[in-house]
Length: 273
Image (cartoon, rainbow, N blue to C red; front, side):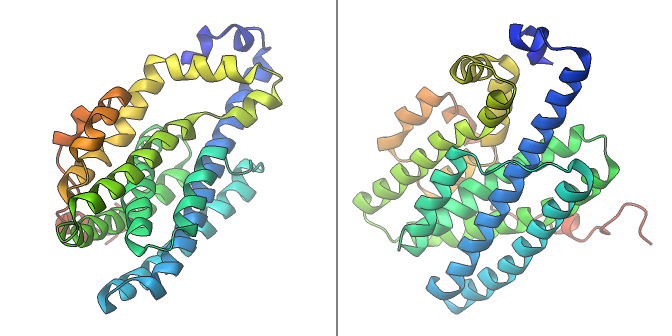
């Protein structure tokens, strides 16, 4: 674990180290909850402002999905972790921007491609490391829903973006870039640093400089960059900016445009009849 190399962590007693790890998990799952709450609000907005009947229907079904996810994460936090952290500043900034922008397509881009794409990658990574079978099974069910959401967003937006002018595309591309830039800060549990009395900026820089965190950030954006490229929002105006973030190379990976029907047709649980 990369925290073993951080002097303030090294000074903690074994008991406090276990407490720190518990706080870190509580913070992470709390952010998952807040992200799903944001997705619930955005999806509910799209049921009224999406431009087509089919898009409204899908937004309505997604609203139900997100409500189920919110309930699941909240119950898990209350019964298993017994500790909840407030929404992080970076995630709040992204959600505020998406929720207050009147343009339906920016809501789609922000939610279906950025928030849901990052959430999908984060849930998959967390599930692979989960030791709690309840969390493992819960994330498996949520991932199935999120994969459908992202795929619908990619296919719906690809057709719409093709109708935009270059200026309009660049405007949406800049929006996507700014959302991704903010999303890099979502991994930083500054509230936990404050709780343990650490220098927040010092701990933040240590976490950002960690090889593990840099690898994890790239892992998260593997579900975002190919989709931005697929729908036509990886324009020349933002390519250099994404390259500075070190994630432009991920754009050549497969997108989420195609539905894996075989995977979606599998039983909800491995031991199902």
